[in-house]
Figure 1 (cartoon, rainbow, N blue to C red):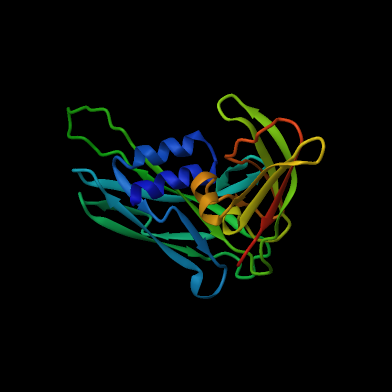
Figure 2: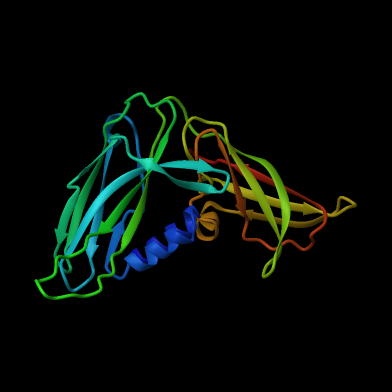
Length: 255
């Protein structure tokens, strides 16, 4: 279950190939749960726990650090060190083989957060000091956990801003959507359903498909959309034609 979860997040967030590689590599030395954490700036959900298990046969020294994320049309990317809004305890630990260490993440920033914030918490394997006169190549693994802190002033408001059809060498004609979030808090595309339809030049329906929240998670991922941003997402569907008009409707469902 843990390996599927780690791989799932790599596909889900679609931040980049680097993250997917880090997740797969980290599974060789450790497993981390959960891979996405949702916090609130006040109340009883200001903190959460991350569990790190040492799956290797030697002690595992790790360090946890946080950095802010910036959302763009293509997803999200690190935007600098955490200014101190998150407290991680303990920040370092030595985990024995087969053992699990719990790390607590606590929001200590603005309790009246107007616009949600997102962070990477990196679980980094630290190098081991070798005995004097001994040398060896040490392969160190990093694992990144997405931490979102919701806005205290409002909820996400996701909608489809526009659509297009593009050509993929393997899949053929595929639909692209631009998901707009006009709310002050981050949102998940996978919390709702997508209805994709295509008509030809005469207006005749040639394609109609609905993706449930479960299908969105399995094929696209969580689909995190930052506050007051628009994200471009390719849908994992093959259209019957490169011509015509594609319409996509998003139903947010239950928040």
